[in-house]
Length: 418
Ligand SMILES: [Ca+2]
Ligand SMILES: [Ca+2]
Image 1 (cartoon, helix red, strand yellow):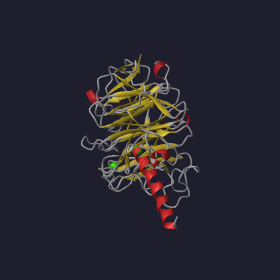
Image 2 (cartoon, rainbow, N blue to C red):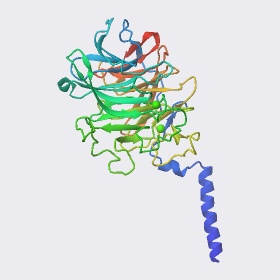
Image 3 (cartoon, protein in one colour):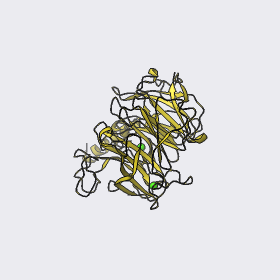
Image 4 (tube, helix red, strand yellow):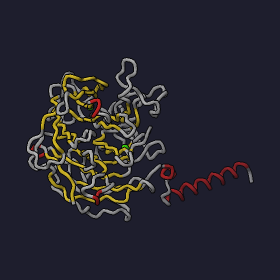
């Protein structure tokens, strides 16, 4: 056999293998992909999709707070619930007082905060209490500045006394220029490691026109992780030494994960420490992710587990792009804008223990998702029946109860019960 014929035969064998593989539906790239995303609208038979036997009820039937965007305890053992309105006022109630009619004003930051209904992704977007709040009185706010257009500010404020925050104690940690009004992210959370995690959107408009999602030299389109307890020279925070991009030339060392479009919203599981983040899609798909250090979550090459080509050439599945755990399509049955929730760790509704509760802002639907961390698979995604109002945000009390809010009807807060 001549060399050229051997080459030809070898080539034909390879070609036959490739054709066979394609006809069998064996994608080479699929094998190397870290996980398989479940399309919730077309799930495997093994996924439990039966309705969750819980009721969604008014947590505080007499209370109304305009655009209640953050619902959180302070971790200070006081049993209080802090409710931040998007226009910049932060209120406080006794979380267990379900008959409360009026919330007390904790601090009014509305002069510093820009919010307009026609630019409704701005305003006060994040509030988190320092893990040692009881001792140091520090709380952190992420908001859109009223001083300059489209400027996001991350600041620390101090408590004036037990009942009030002091608006005149602002220490600005970070200012982030926003190219457009939308996609400002805005969830801020302290992790179990004591560092502050900040979810930033891609900066806005459609298609990620500046390519922020895949660009490690901009903070936009990423989740940051910073140490607010150690200043670094002039900078009022420092970089945890084990941040994934420390020492990498062109990357901002604040970045913990990237390839993000607009996380709305994220939460740590208080038991496992897992960081759950729902990233809002653009035209076709919504997605839920577990966030890993250094992870690239795909935007704007991928929209959930699909190539996104409106912002460039897009990408098929790639080992370096982390696919979401689950996705759902833009249909009336599912929704068009995911609102990420929290993992239930309360005691009042034991049937919900360990479920990640989330919803959709447009369809108003709610679901309870169960993830098995041993097999790294989603085993349940069960609807929770309620009034289908816009699902604005989720929050959690210090004892692990999950709350949810809508801005409809003057701003109402809900809880989950059996
Ligand atoms: Ca923006
Ligand atoms: Ca993604």
